[in-house]
Length: 294
Image (cartoon, rainbow, N blue to C red; front, side, top):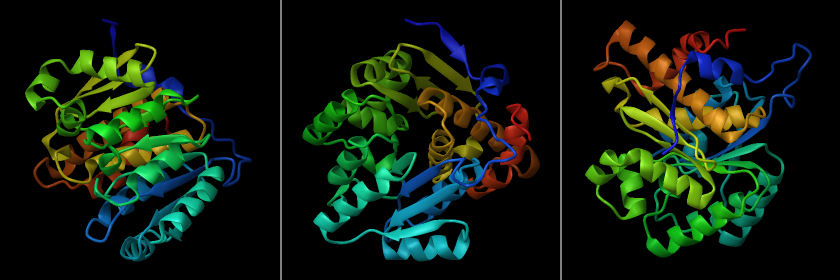
């Protein structure tokens, strides 16, 4: 097995994307967040705000009406586009939006059984843009998963998938204990076979690249073990890729900055008390620890 590379400041400080003083909003990339559903609106808010705070120039949320309402009331910097109910119109709009952006995130706050999930995922993976697959887009159904793998395999630029242990176990049709015990081998194998970057989330997070490189960050923080933390991470990865970072570097950087922001929040207000929304306010500490301070 490949040497495990530690995700730390020394690694990610050199990954910082450029930020020219003469840049404008289009200089810093356009991210599309396809997230949220009627009863999970917060996931889109968290992912969108994280992408904006990553430094991306433009972030658009593509969602249903209740989520659009939530985002518009909380994050006025976001652009908004309504997901049509009609499948043909939805996929037509998705193709149009993906052709005009630099990165796409799909899945946070979306149920796996959303009727057009596979169609939307196929549209985004078939585009030339960077793609992050999270939560509801990571199917456990064998036939859907096999088609997803086939689409991942033929991409020129690897997509990023962000499962937690339970999601990865379901994707592999395995038990969580087996995934925990063999996480390094399984993450590397999945990434190599399916041409993707796997961010396997746990108290020890792994980033496995399709070329066989394996990265690890072990910074236990029970304050991150709350619904919404992964949405912030996925939004950061998407925002970094919108700014031109290649997928593995974006993933490692986001994992480190997310973790250090979480540690700063825990130190200030406590692991039990902190919320995923607090991570957004502690991102400056994360950037400083990463050597990315302006």
